[in-house]
Length: 116
Image (cartoon, rainbow, N blue to C red; front, side, top):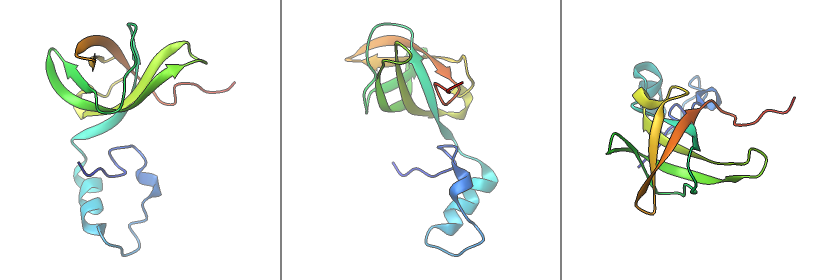
């Protein structure tokens, strides 16, 4: 599935004042918005989200994990994944299917950790 910088919330890296292959698609995405966005989430149960695992809401698969790990700094399992825009607000409850079992997760603002 092709992704664009606006889905990952890094549209600031795109210079639409220059001409390049794919310019029209990115201009369209900037103007009309995107259907999915990259979110950070923290698992509320024991488990590790891995690339390719499904993300579900109320039993329906709505997205895919792009990466996940156990954060030694935070002491929790965290991950990133693409979900529909309707599920991107911090605090939104999701389920990550870890080895076929639903593990509760919650959307968090990024970055997960900021140095004081």
